[in-house]
Image (tube, rainbow, N blue to C red):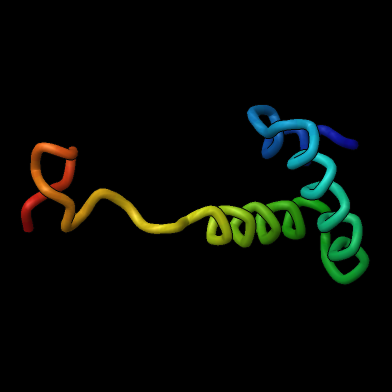
Length: 65
């Protein structure tokens, strides 16, 4: 799409890149492309987070707090 979105999508799969670019196009009418790309990247990162290793047994890689 552009150098701005390329910075964010260089390690994305092709399907995730298409989704990212679609969402940036939808949002960039209200703001700059760079602002839209940063916002979409943040949203997509939050959608991927599904927990971590905290509170798992230490043998499974968890951390004891």
